[in-house]
Image 1 (spheres, rainbow, N blue to C red):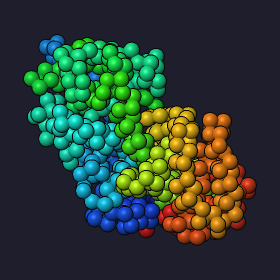
Image 2: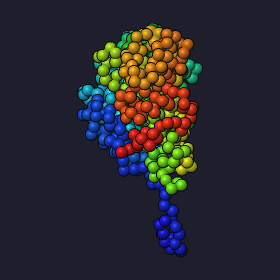
Image 3: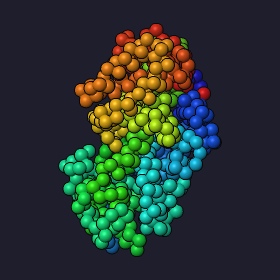
Image 4: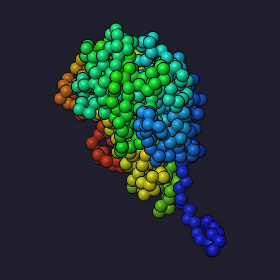
Length: 546
């Protein structure tokens, strides 16, 4: 006990109070993230280390909290009654955007010109999702859009500005910007994920074809980041559903025909302004061919879905870091909470969940780094929806269990955990729900049955050493014959078997064995903390920052 003088009497201040998690580098202290950069992109070490130092920085934590607390506000008219359709953000939001875009979280994969650039960028995204999920949205959209913008010379100025390492919040034409952001306006109120059901229309001003000018009329029900400098959208043209690039401002500086009707009041992700908009003769430029808009805009979905898989692993890491910090520091019944027999199995189980998710996400990123290899292209095509499905489904349970592992203090808004908890469900919805990911896996296996072979080949060496993994492999071999009928069960089996093989390759034996026994065996319950026969402290130590 410590005694303090409050000018009236001395009163005891109890020990065993846990300060905030600060003064630790979330990159160098993370065995998985630092291992990925060390193996795949050592040239990015200093960059990742700089961002890692920001994750648990008190000032950055405050900015993340303030950006969620003081939410964006829509202004449709200015003081004298002119239409402006501006979204006002708290300064903390701009602070986070400047840090994220200035760190290259959005563009490193496309600008580094080094081997392992997607892996390095995935580590940055993993770190950023530990800081803030709301700004991870514009960062991820920029990452996904850059190759599409670079595909046509007409969009060179947009590609340059979106890829720039920096943040320019000025509401100005793209030619006046040192850096730019981009949003995606895709779904409509009646169609949701069915983009072919969209009724928004686009007609050419003059000539038809890629890069030509069109006028767009219609609406979008989920319009992300409406203060971006440009937007990728889909609309019906004479040739069918097409993809278009819509600038926020015309070259002469006037506001384009985009009206923001209102901002969404969301469960989480509150610092990110999601909106409902209407197009009124909005000027746009055709991206790709008429009638190929769904395929064109979904070509970027491979990257956004990877980003959500990696981001969910990062969110797990943030929550787990809080749980370990608290349970290692707080004592009860004469020992740290992390050593109590009722708590250690919970923390070890959460550590296994994070380890599997992180390795799975980074494996997909590694496949993006080797797209000149046919096998790696197949790995990417199959494992992207698998990882997006599995990681994004599991993160909500992890964040909830972490809150329980800390207790009431983690249920208070001053703590980071409520932000994680509200953020977690979004990742499974955005860029394709869980059912869409399962359907995508089914389409891959129906159209390209051999896509599963490189994944299974990678699992086989580990399966030779682990009978439970061998059984899972045999089951997958049978299930892939009818992917439409086996659905979520098949995707789950692929996810778990791939995670297990990756842990056998990269993690300590005690961690890999615990994962295989629990996730592929029969002695593990549906909730966390039901591990049996596991060296809990060794598994927890693998997850500790340090």
